[in-house]
Length: 273
Image (cartoon, rainbow, N blue to C red; front, side):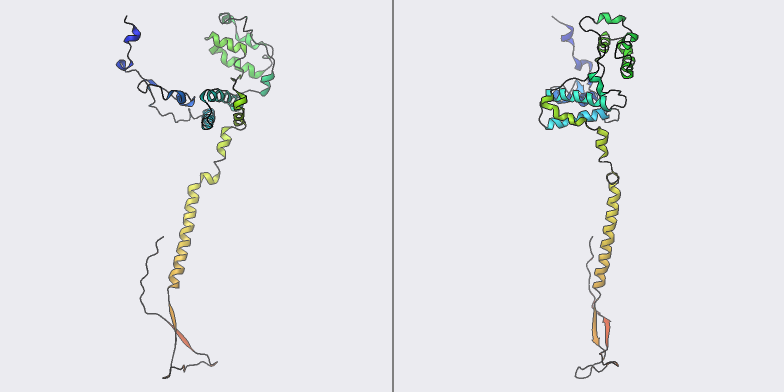
Protein backbone atom coordinates (compact mmCIF):
# COMPACT_ATOMS: atom_id res chain seq x y z
CA UNK A 1 0.00 0.00 0.00
CA UNK A 2 1.38 3.37 -1.01
CA UNK A 3 0.68 6.09 1.51
CA UNK A 4 1.50 9.78 1.66
CA UNK A 5 3.89 9.04 4.50
CA UNK A 6 5.86 6.61 2.35
CA UNK A 7 5.99 9.08 -0.54
CA UNK A 8 7.18 11.94 1.65
CA UNK A 9 10.89 12.65 1.32
CA UNK A 10 12.18 15.88 2.82
CA UNK A 11 15.32 15.76 0.71
CA UNK A 12 13.24 15.82 -2.47
CA UNK A 13 11.41 18.94 -1.40
CA UNK A 14 14.51 20.53 0.19
CA UNK A 15 12.76 20.83 3.53
CA UNK A 16 14.90 21.85 6.51
CA UNK A 17 14.06 23.21 9.95
CA UNK A 18 15.91 26.06 11.60
CA UNK A 19 16.22 25.14 15.27
CA UNK A 20 16.15 28.67 16.61
CA UNK A 21 17.48 29.94 19.96
CA UNK A 22 15.10 27.84 22.07
CA UNK A 23 17.03 24.70 21.19
CA UNK A 24 20.08 25.74 23.20
CA UNK A 25 18.60 28.17 25.73
CA UNK A 26 16.19 25.46 26.93
CA UNK A 27 18.91 22.82 27.16
CA UNK A 28 17.18 20.51 24.68
CA UNK A 29 20.47 20.27 22.82
CA UNK A 30 21.91 18.29 25.73
CA UNK A 31 19.43 15.51 24.97
CA UNK A 32 19.12 15.71 21.21
CA UNK A 33 22.54 16.61 19.79
CA UNK A 34 23.57 12.97 19.51
CA UNK A 35 20.36 11.85 17.80
CA UNK A 36 19.06 14.74 15.70
CA UNK A 37 19.36 14.63 11.92
CA UNK A 38 21.75 17.41 11.00
CA UNK A 39 20.41 17.51 7.42
CA UNK A 40 16.86 18.25 8.54
CA UNK A 41 17.52 20.34 11.63
CA UNK A 42 20.10 23.04 11.07
CA UNK A 43 21.55 26.07 12.85
CA UNK A 44 22.59 28.74 10.38
CA UNK A 45 21.62 31.94 12.20
CA UNK A 46 23.52 33.89 14.82
CA UNK A 47 21.52 34.02 18.03
CA UNK A 48 24.17 35.85 20.05
CA UNK A 49 21.93 38.91 20.39
CA UNK A 50 20.43 40.81 23.30
CA UNK A 51 16.96 39.45 22.57
CA UNK A 52 18.25 35.96 23.36
CA UNK A 53 20.85 36.80 26.02
CA UNK A 54 18.28 37.92 28.55
CA UNK A 55 18.91 37.84 32.28
CA UNK A 56 16.52 34.91 32.73
CA UNK A 57 18.20 32.88 29.96
CA UNK A 58 21.59 33.69 31.46
CA UNK A 59 20.46 32.45 34.87
CA UNK A 60 19.02 29.28 33.34
CA UNK A 61 22.19 28.52 31.36
CA UNK A 62 24.48 29.17 34.34
CA UNK A 63 22.42 26.89 36.58
CA UNK A 64 22.31 24.16 33.95
CA UNK A 65 26.08 24.27 33.43
CA UNK A 66 26.67 24.11 37.17
CA UNK A 67 24.45 21.03 37.54
CA UNK A 68 26.10 19.35 34.54
CA UNK A 69 29.53 19.94 36.08
CA UNK A 70 28.23 18.46 39.33
CA UNK A 71 27.27 15.27 37.48
CA UNK A 72 23.50 15.55 37.97
CA UNK A 73 21.46 13.26 35.72
CA UNK A 74 19.50 14.88 32.87
CA UNK A 75 15.94 14.49 34.19
CA UNK A 76 16.96 16.09 37.49
CA UNK A 77 18.60 18.95 35.61
CA UNK A 78 15.55 19.71 33.48
CA UNK A 79 13.07 19.64 36.35
CA UNK A 80 15.27 21.67 38.68
CA UNK A 81 16.27 24.26 36.08
CA UNK A 82 12.65 24.64 34.97
CA UNK A 83 11.37 25.15 38.52
CA UNK A 84 14.13 27.50 39.70
CA UNK A 85 14.05 29.55 36.49
CA UNK A 86 10.33 30.08 37.04
CA UNK A 87 11.04 31.18 40.62
CA UNK A 88 13.81 33.48 39.43
CA UNK A 89 11.53 35.08 36.84
CA UNK A 90 8.73 35.80 39.27
CA UNK A 91 11.18 37.18 41.85
CA UNK A 92 13.38 39.42 39.67
CA UNK A 93 11.46 40.10 36.46
CA UNK A 94 10.77 43.85 36.12
CA UNK A 95 7.17 43.07 35.09
CA UNK A 96 6.51 40.73 37.98
CA UNK A 97 4.07 41.66 40.72
CA UNK A 98 4.56 38.40 42.61
CA UNK A 99 4.56 38.41 46.39
CA UNK A 100 5.64 35.52 48.64
CA UNK A 101 2.26 35.78 50.35
CA UNK A 102 0.64 34.37 47.21
CA UNK A 103 1.79 30.89 48.20
CA UNK A 104 -0.30 31.00 51.39
CA UNK A 105 -3.16 33.07 50.02
CA UNK A 106 -6.70 31.66 49.94
CA UNK A 107 -8.52 32.67 46.77
CA UNK A 108 -11.52 31.45 44.89
CA UNK A 109 -10.80 29.37 41.80
CA UNK A 110 -12.73 27.15 39.44
CA UNK A 111 -13.67 23.71 40.63
CA UNK A 112 -11.63 21.59 38.25
CA UNK A 113 -13.73 18.47 38.83
CA UNK A 114 -17.06 20.06 37.92
CA UNK A 115 -16.00 22.41 35.13
CA UNK A 116 -15.10 21.05 31.72
CA UNK A 117 -13.11 22.82 29.08
CA UNK A 118 -16.17 23.34 26.87
CA UNK A 119 -18.14 24.94 29.71
CA UNK A 120 -15.52 27.69 29.95
CA UNK A 121 -16.67 29.22 26.67
CA UNK A 122 -19.26 31.42 28.36
CA UNK A 123 -17.00 32.63 31.18
CA UNK A 124 -16.10 36.30 30.98
CA UNK A 125 -13.27 38.42 32.32
CA UNK A 126 -15.62 39.97 34.86
CA UNK A 127 -16.34 36.51 36.23
CA UNK A 128 -12.66 35.92 36.84
CA UNK A 129 -12.12 39.33 38.41
CA UNK A 130 -15.04 38.91 40.80
CA UNK A 131 -13.63 35.84 42.58
CA UNK A 132 -12.92 36.12 46.28
CA UNK A 133 -9.27 36.89 46.91
CA UNK A 134 -8.88 38.20 43.38
CA UNK A 135 -11.10 41.29 43.30
CA UNK A 136 -9.07 42.96 46.07
CA UNK A 137 -5.64 42.00 44.71
CA UNK A 138 -4.28 44.24 41.96
CA UNK A 139 -1.60 41.76 40.91
CA UNK A 140 -4.02 38.86 40.38
CA UNK A 141 -6.38 41.13 38.49
CA UNK A 142 -3.52 42.26 36.27
CA UNK A 143 -2.65 38.66 35.41
CA UNK A 144 -6.23 37.92 34.36
CA UNK A 145 -6.61 41.11 32.33
CA UNK A 146 -3.39 40.53 30.41
CA UNK A 147 -4.00 36.81 29.81
CA UNK A 148 -7.71 36.76 29.05
CA UNK A 149 -7.50 37.92 25.38
CA UNK A 150 -5.31 34.92 24.59
CA UNK A 151 -7.31 32.56 26.81
CA UNK A 152 -10.50 33.32 24.87
CA UNK A 153 -9.00 31.55 21.85
CA UNK A 154 -7.68 28.57 23.83
CA UNK A 155 -10.26 27.12 26.21
CA UNK A 156 -7.68 24.92 27.94
CA UNK A 157 -5.68 28.04 28.80
CA UNK A 158 -8.86 29.71 29.93
CA UNK A 159 -9.50 26.89 32.35
CA UNK A 160 -5.94 27.12 33.67
CA UNK A 161 -6.40 30.85 34.19
CA UNK A 162 -9.61 30.22 36.08
CA UNK A 163 -7.89 27.62 38.26
CA UNK A 164 -5.15 30.07 39.17
CA UNK A 165 -2.43 28.10 37.41
CA UNK A 166 -1.05 31.32 35.96
CA UNK A 167 -0.70 33.03 39.33
CA UNK A 168 3.06 32.56 39.40
CA UNK A 169 2.81 28.85 40.11
CA UNK A 170 6.10 27.13 39.44
CA UNK A 171 6.63 23.41 38.77
CA UNK A 172 7.89 21.23 41.57
CA UNK A 173 11.33 19.65 41.76
CA UNK A 174 13.11 17.27 44.10
CA UNK A 175 14.14 19.63 46.89
CA UNK A 176 15.59 16.75 48.89
CA UNK A 177 18.21 16.02 46.23
CA UNK A 178 18.65 19.41 44.60
CA UNK A 179 17.53 21.89 47.25
CA UNK A 180 21.05 23.33 47.55
CA UNK A 181 20.66 24.95 44.11
CA UNK A 182 17.90 27.20 45.45
CA UNK A 183 20.68 29.42 46.84
CA UNK A 184 21.16 30.70 43.27
CA UNK A 185 17.98 32.73 43.84
CA UNK A 186 19.59 34.83 46.57
CA UNK A 187 20.76 37.56 44.19
CA UNK A 188 19.99 38.54 40.58
CA UNK A 189 22.40 37.75 37.77
CA UNK A 190 22.92 41.45 37.06
CA UNK A 191 24.47 42.00 40.49
CA UNK A 192 26.70 38.99 40.05
CA UNK A 193 28.04 40.53 36.83
CA UNK A 194 28.65 43.89 38.52
CA UNK A 195 31.31 42.28 40.67
CA UNK A 196 33.51 42.15 37.58
CA UNK A 197 32.74 45.59 36.18
CA UNK A 198 34.82 47.80 38.47
CA UNK A 199 36.84 50.70 37.09
CA UNK A 200 40.05 48.65 37.15
CA UNK A 201 38.40 45.78 35.32
CA UNK A 202 36.90 48.02 32.64
CA UNK A 203 40.12 50.08 32.24
CA UNK A 204 42.64 47.26 32.21
CA UNK A 205 44.20 48.36 28.93
CA UNK A 206 44.75 51.89 30.29
CA UNK A 207 46.58 50.55 33.33
CA UNK A 208 48.68 48.34 31.07
CA UNK A 209 49.83 51.39 29.10
CA UNK A 210 50.62 53.29 32.32
CA UNK A 211 52.62 50.39 33.77
CA UNK A 212 54.54 49.90 30.52
CA UNK A 213 55.32 53.64 30.43
CA UNK A 214 56.70 53.50 33.98
CA UNK A 215 58.84 50.50 33.06
CA UNK A 216 60.25 52.35 30.04
CA UNK A 217 61.17 55.35 32.23
CA UNK A 218 62.87 53.10 34.80
CA UNK A 219 64.85 51.34 32.09
CA UNK A 220 65.88 54.69 30.53
CA UNK A 221 67.13 56.01 33.89
CA UNK A 222 69.01 52.79 34.53
CA UNK A 223 70.55 53.00 31.06
CA UNK A 224 71.75 56.55 31.71
CA UNK A 225 73.33 55.60 35.02
CA UNK A 226 75.03 52.64 33.38
CA UNK A 227 76.55 54.82 30.63
CA UNK A 228 77.77 57.39 33.18
CA UNK A 229 79.47 54.69 35.21
CA UNK A 230 81.42 53.65 32.11
CA UNK A 231 83.10 57.10 31.92
CA UNK A 232 86.52 56.33 33.46
CA UNK A 233 88.94 58.83 35.12
CA UNK A 234 92.52 58.44 36.31
CA UNK A 235 94.38 60.46 38.92
CA UNK A 236 97.94 61.35 37.98
CA UNK A 237 100.46 63.55 39.76
CA UNK A 238 101.17 66.81 38.00
CA UNK A 239 105.00 66.83 38.35
CA UNK A 240 107.42 64.15 39.36
CA UNK A 241 111.11 64.47 39.82
CA UNK A 242 113.65 62.05 38.46
CA UNK A 243 113.23 59.73 41.40
CA UNK A 244 109.45 59.73 41.02
CA UNK A 245 108.84 61.98 44.02
CA UNK A 246 106.11 64.53 43.93
CA UNK A 247 107.47 68.05 43.76
CA UNK A 248 104.26 70.06 43.53
CA UNK A 249 102.63 70.66 46.82
CA UNK A 250 100.11 73.26 47.82
CA UNK A 251 100.34 75.62 50.77
CA UNK A 252 99.05 72.97 53.15
CA UNK A 253 101.58 70.42 51.93
CA UNK A 254 98.95 68.37 50.13
CA UNK A 255 99.71 66.80 46.82
CA UNK A 256 98.12 68.32 43.77
CA UNK A 257 96.52 65.90 41.40
CA UNK A 258 94.77 66.34 38.09
CA UNK A 259 92.12 64.16 36.45
CA UNK A 260 92.15 63.25 32.82
CA UNK A 261 89.78 61.25 30.69
CA UNK A 262 91.20 57.96 29.54
CA UNK A 263 91.90 57.91 25.87
CA UNK A 264 90.98 54.30 25.42
CA UNK A 265 88.13 53.80 23.01
CA UNK A 266 85.74 51.23 24.34
CA UNK A 267 83.04 49.51 22.39
CA UNK A 268 79.66 49.33 24.08
CA UNK A 269 77.09 46.73 23.27
CA UNK A 270 73.60 48.16 22.79
CA UNK A 271 71.28 47.55 25.70
CA UNK A 272 68.32 45.53 24.55
CA UNK A 273 65.08 46.21 26.44
